[in-house]
Length: 394
Image 1 (cartoon, one colour):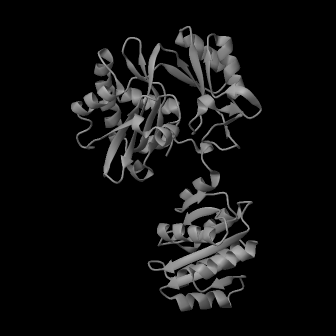
Image 2 (cartoon, rainbow, N blue to C red; image 1 turned 60 degrees about the horizontal axis):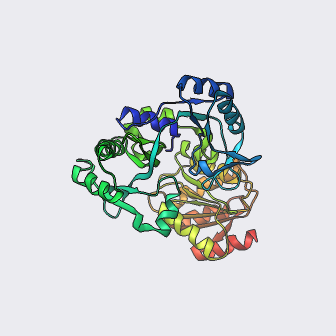
Image 3 (cartoon, rainbow, N blue to C red; image 1 turned 60 degrees about the vertical axis):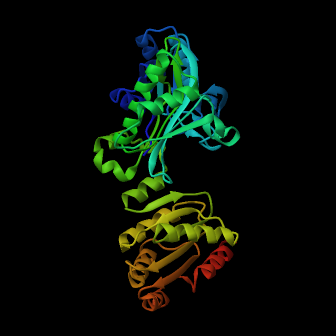
């Protein structure tokens, strides 16, 4: 689950990670009032969307309007907010369609001496979190990783212990952080690592992380993603979820207990099992088709879930056909076949439907489909199914 920058910074503040004063607003007048309240000579107005690269992003209808604007008066803050709110911002992570800006964050300025990058993710190969830092703050870290990977320094740490003092010293030496800034780095890095573990994050990224002229270290950004599988331990975090930033069909699927990710193809997939779903997408691609989604109905799928799954799949205007690929293990083929028949009666299949069944009670399941009134193209194996659905939508 992703959250906005202003939300991440409030959590940082509570965790002892230094941030600047700021206020989230939803109208231009509120932005002007926020500037006055901050009381400084400069402030920054930042678009709040779930995407990075906002500083280099542009509003679709006004290419001169950036997603992050430095302002020096209440009137400038008001104008910057007016140029962002209600408009679509395009960044390197949004795609050409952009994302609508519904709120902005007005934040106090500060004396920036250096900009760094800092991020924490889970290194699955090492089975530990890894803190990554770089001198190349303020730019796309993906570009740095591709072109100059030697500028990214890493320290793995034990989640039960946190980041050790010697690891902070190693990073400071590599980043050329000295004096008061090195002392600030110890407080900052240990706090952000503790935050990552305590909140079950899958990502905590600060770009840029700044060092001020006084040697303070401050998070000038906050990109935080939580592991949804651990949210049962953090029910208060659910209040931070912004559904307007998420794909509507994915939210709908999650509410039905389905694992669904929307893609850009035209062949919808309904599969039980994440690995089988990935294989199904691969083989569709291999035979010249384009998968429209990842959809795992799980091993215990029932008629209601399968029906809702078809509603979601068929609501995609790009969907030109559906491939159902089921391996009957926990869920018997007869159960899935009956669910497909019920879904066909309730939803109606307006596009070609190819079904491949295998596993427990497969013959009985195939017989149910053959004797039903729904229009189904049966397949003997996965390759046969992929070829038939690709041909059907051609």
